[in-house]
Amino acid sequence: MIGVATSTWHYRHHPRARVADPLAHTERYQPCALSSEERAQIVSAIRDGWHEQRSVEQSFYDAFDAGRPVASLSTWMRCARGLRGPRPVRRRRTRRTVAMPQWEACAPNEVWCWDITKLPGPYTGVWYQQYTIIDAFSRTIIASSVETDESDELAVALFQAAIEREGVHPRIVHSDGGPAMKSVLLADFYRHAGISASRNRPRVSNDNPHIESYFKTEKYRPDYPSQFTSVEHAREWAEHVVHDYNTRHHHSSLAGFTPEQVHTGTWVDVHTERQAVLDAQYAANPERYRGRRPIAATTPEITQLNPT
Image (cartoon, rainbow, N blue to C red; front, side, top):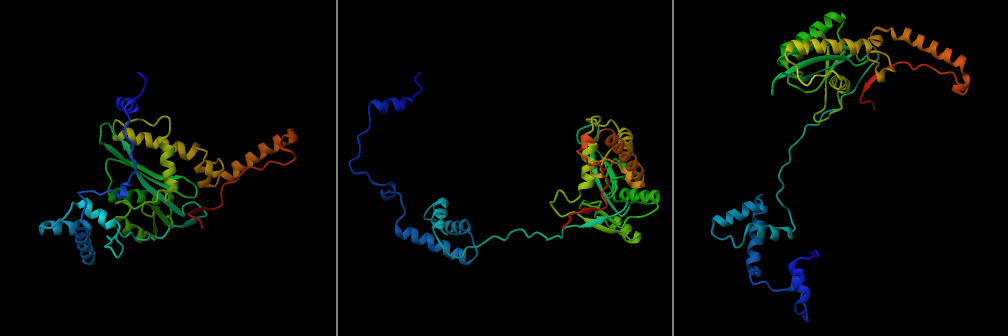
């Protein structure tokens, strides 16, 4: 009722007798404590084990099997904490140093990026694989297909169709280090086509930003279904999204132009029309612009990955 424990109430009314000359806990005698000889024996066994590149735990069990553990494993660990000297160090996993991928594109079809993302199927554990190739400069989806599985042959077929449609092959193809991306079949195709392969660094999530940005734009659409009833349903939806993205999506990294406009070069005409609109607004209300003629933004002249 008063919010005090029973023991607290008891000791407040029946306090313990105070100790006249208290002794620090570190100075108190513990009957179960190790003797100096026993402690020296443990320390000697630990140092001998370190000399043989064996851990404290290994040395303890060696002594245990020999019938002389002296103390528990936790006691051996406490004895080892205060020791100085060379200790066996477990080798750490060596990680391969990979150079940071860098490239630049000054025109369409110079650098392509590609990846595979999963689309949810009708049942738990069923996924459809969406293969997508995007042009790094114009952000145009060059080719896209939805398949039931991931394979090297499907990846090569997608690139063959994309090159045939564009009439030119890219200088560089950038991707992550997935199985299909590093397949021997695709590497042979690159070599015969004169294409250089560029790879993400391991465990670096932003080395393929253009294709990942598209996947986010695609999957955050209001009409993105929670699941696709069939692979045909996924293909129809993906085809519609790709066409809408290429022709109607005003890309923030392209000064509001659509990927198709930048890919085909028609953005120049659209830019002229936008500038004409701004000039008319400026002529009608110059005070709104503080005497500065507004200039319509243009698309970037270069696209870079990991610029220095």
